[in-house]
Length: 108
Image (cartoon, rainbow, N blue to C red; front, side, top):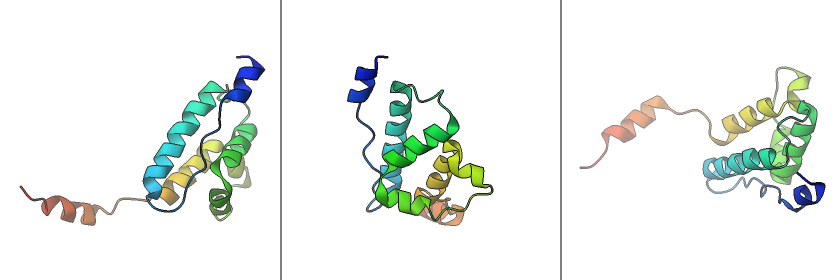
């Protein structure tokens, strides 16, 4: 892909941390995956991919990233680990007991 074409492709909109965080995270993640393919970033070095991801995620989300605890310092430069950390932060884990309660409260 020509360099001029790559420069015209917009980066994903920054991740919003207010309102429906889970839905906005899903939107951002999908836009990121598409953008990564379009600008041929998939085969780039992990450090570069992580830097571009953190530049796209926005200032507020970058502040959240700085609070994440990783097992190793190198994990801060691994886009897969960074995405997993955001996934846990934005979506969290499902409370099975509560989900079962909601399911059994259904109205027919």
